[in-house]
Image 1 (cartoon, rainbow, N blue to C red):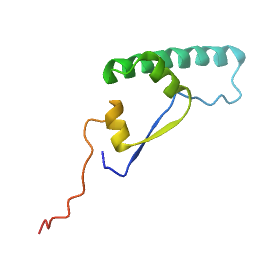
Image 2 (cartoon, rainbow, N blue to C red):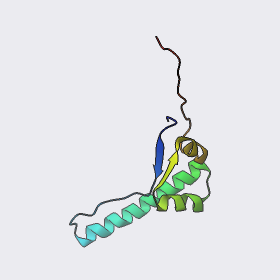
Image 3 (cartoon, rainbow, N blue to C red):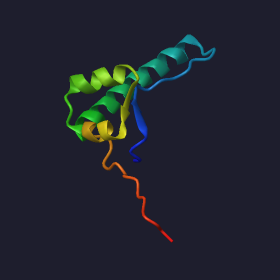
Length: 86
């Protein structure tokens, strides 16, 4: 990831457009399952506590490339190479 990039952590979202109530409920249940899965994967992959990941997924969180690396969701942060490639 380039050092000037930002990462946004957020929960799964959906737009409900004129869906019958039954479909709305089913989609909401699927979103909750997806959120639980996403949170578990973040906890497993980053080593961060469940409460930290749950809090961060609850709202949109923007972090820098270095912060994302510290958080555990980015492996490498690229540095600019000013060398001549010619």
